[in-house]
Length: 321
Image (cartoon, rainbow, N blue to C red):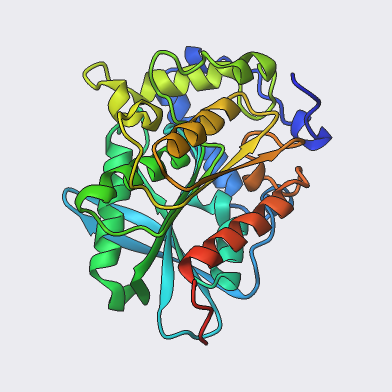
């Protein structure tokens, strides 16, 4: 590994052979992990939500499916607020919205904004591009009903971590043509290449022993989430021909993350195509570190940076109470 991961994360090192799991075993493992991530005890690792934010659950009906949303709002009353649509990580095979409560509630209270975290469908039952369709359709529906959701359709951002970062990036790419106008995107240690070259980056070799993202899990995630009939370039933001006309972008990377180069290469491409993009690099951070602030101190300065970036782009004229 390129440097040592924080001690707490090393205690959670996962040596499981993910590629050997059956679909049923994976689903059972995911359900157990999600229950744990949503428990009060998990707050020691995932962080305490901001007390100035209210967290509720809601549902949204989309064509052929109903999704659960985890909605974060400031307790202080505002007329209407910017909207941040958020996506958890988990390689499209795991994860839950509750794992991001620490970050999302903080942004809701201090941006302020309405932060909606989408419980998008997961593989192996729902492979790509269905998780991306869940995200995009949710975004469109929220913007179409601004009064019901209490949001300003003229101040919208997307945000995601890991696989959720890929979803956020793909939504921005799709929306630039005929979708809702986006004012910012925040991609936290995103996956941006889901092709056969997913592991062909220097950071993969440098951080192969990363305790929070094993190569076995990465390979299993790609295999299970990518159906053989789908061209992986269509879900790999790094492979798009043009990355022009995208909203201002903040990409947060972790030095001890195997897919750190996914983020840095994406920023290079964004800048080359004229998109305003910033790369933020945290030297003592691991993959998922913004979901594990109890283990990785770098989560706090990263959270402050994300907050400042979103406030600048969603409240450019200041904040009215």
